[in-house]
Image (cartoon, helix red, strand yellow):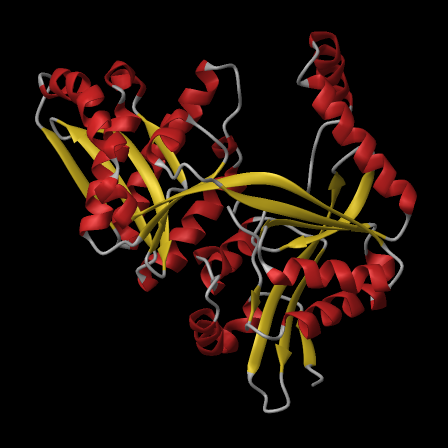
Length: 379
């Protein structure tokens, strides 16, 4: 059965789709908060893109079948500056943003590739990041691209750890965690009474974000690094995210306090019974008390007591995630598509050099010098 495709040129023009968008979210078992209208809009409002393509697919009965928000970004991903087709909800999401009603993956994939083929002069490569490895849609996009004679590369790039309510209840490590953190908790309590609160209203969260930003900037500066929040666009993204998700009941800001002084905070979007541990930071004055671990322990307890079914620890690894998260991390994959094999070869050579860099000090030093000469940018 053929599908009707309409391409919307901006997220603002899609406001009339919000009710149908929500219904589609409920119909997609794999849907995440990163697929919501509000999340995608926050990204598109904060960050500039060369083009915006919100692909809206309908069946013969005009039922909404899929929403695929895409952007064209100009920047350097490997060696040369190119134009890349990417998910609109990235690069600051744990999952790629695409909604496809089950059973329609093949037809939607063909439609996405057909659109890219029609606009072939607008892009040099297609970079669709953070698909769940077992998601059928990514494989269908790859197959449709190969049918066009394009070069396709699929590889595992990240891992996600999740913790279910049942695992939490049965997990001995959480009991051990409480023992390990007891000393830190007792020492912190000597400084003042401990408190833990979760805020879910936009005004409550927004008034605390400046403190969160300041902690993050200070923490990165202490390591000789620049925090993403040094960029005003990144701060704007967080504000847009809160303004969009909070009225929908889809975001928490959890705060650990000591004597009413904020010690640690975490921004956590939520959707469909899953809490995403998105971004955290702590007050450097309390660093010796393991504030992030104490905060995480309290947040997990609060989340599962409040009806959360699964806690998603997001991309990347850390001692917190390894200790509290599932022992079976889930793989995420990246799908790259090129019209020309030379660009594909360039990407593979670059990634091989990156692997060598991690194993050799000399290659690592050369890599740093090249980074300064060829700074990475996706926008």
